[in-house]
Length: 606
Image (cartoon, one colour):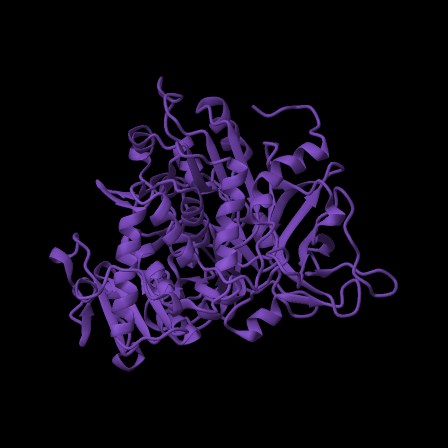
């Protein structure tokens, strides 16, 4: 349970150092890769389970052999060290097998979101200049949306047992991954294959949420991968008896980097699921004696929403880490389920900082016990103006305890992982993330986009995403990018996208105000079809408001504050309001009956 006493700063630091001390000696120029780490586990823990999935167990030794076959098969297909191969596959053991195998021979993998299709998929492949694509047959439909000329020349398909007995692609010139692996060696590639590759070299690309279907490819080095798992595993103090649980997608940083990295470092198994099953959650935990799980807040909320049971504490789950955990759910996991350690944090896949709450202070995203020794600062930010606060000389102003500001982190060029910012494949996107000459000439600071506040004890609290971004279902959604897509829908004079709070949900749901002189001209079915074809599912607005005129500022910017305040409450506006009915494939009027049928609570204020 949370200790009400103030935790001394040195105690917080000691708890943090359980993780950071493990990576303190790593150097960016060190000749070491994740492939080397897999080979180490194959030698010292070869018979231990690595992935447990739907009744199948793959040991570290078996994974090493399978990865070797992938690497040799890639070389036989004409791929070479330094090439990029895209990977699109749902959660299953073959996913890490592929990218680990490619890493064995110095090939970089681009981890594709399984919902990518059409121009979204084309854009992702173009951003990374992928020479080949390895896809699961469960994703063949998405791949088939690419024009033949937009597909990489080399295509490999990995059969999925639930898809028509294995294959459903029908794509021309597709090779079968299993057959190619069957002809390849299971032996480790020759020592010289990865000669000269260093910790700072790229392991793979992870794509940002890409709300309009135009994601950015974030660069992930071998060092970043190793750092992610070792820090949290050290804080958790993982040991031989621990078992990890993962329901997060393997193409994301949390499930695909943090969890896999921790398993590889500490030689512990991952119980992998395709996705979260609330009904099977505790059965899985008990069956496999799971001790630790990485979460996003939504997962914990779904679990906590289940009715109490007499055996709520009859399990082995004792350690959690992640982001987005609401205080009420946090308390339930401690008091109702008996979880002993919850490490809430704040960061991002590509971030050059990380804050972790190692003191179980409910509601806080972490503490910087000695903030001046870190690369993190908080700049005062005027939310109404959408800009930084400046003093009389025009300089940016640091926030004081209790004030809201944007978290920024200085880019450090030291020998280790601290402060390392690897950016994106796009130089333009990388530069847009940076502030320069903030406190001294030549300094560079990464903008987090997160509004935070901190108290006198330097515990940090997440406030919101800046301006035109909100967080929904674990994804950061850019209102500007969504609006740009919706603006192509024929009819409305203006499009204003914003996030609104939904009672009982974390983050904000998307809502769009469409300006129509005549509300009857709005076709809810056509709009739903249009949005679904062009936006990622989580970026499709949950609510639609039909306005007669746009609310503009003096500088002709769309105003959002009042719209957010009124939300989807019919009592606060006479404008027609609609809510998305995904099963019906349309939007229906916001009424108490419709909200109840869709499992959405009435608007409770913003």
